Image (cartoon, rainbow, N blue to C red; front, side, top):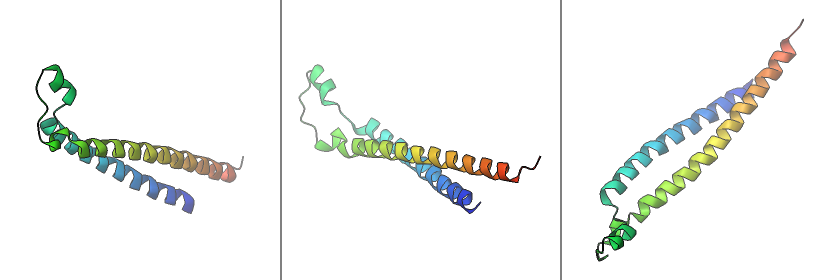
Length: 99
């Protein structure tokens, strides 16, 4: 039973982190929307690329990649914890079942 409580605690922590990174990603994508200038689009429009480097939003794009990978890892761990908890609950139910 203690292991199930521990799994639940870690699951809640993972959910909190996933939710937090989603909120931060929203702010990051909002910043990209307002600041990003695509060199490909500008070259197709025949506009010289002489804008400041911050308009490439490199840090924001890196953040999006990092949090995406982090969320995938946390979701995999979350599915494992939930699966393990269900197996433990089923094991406890089978042990307590007396026909």
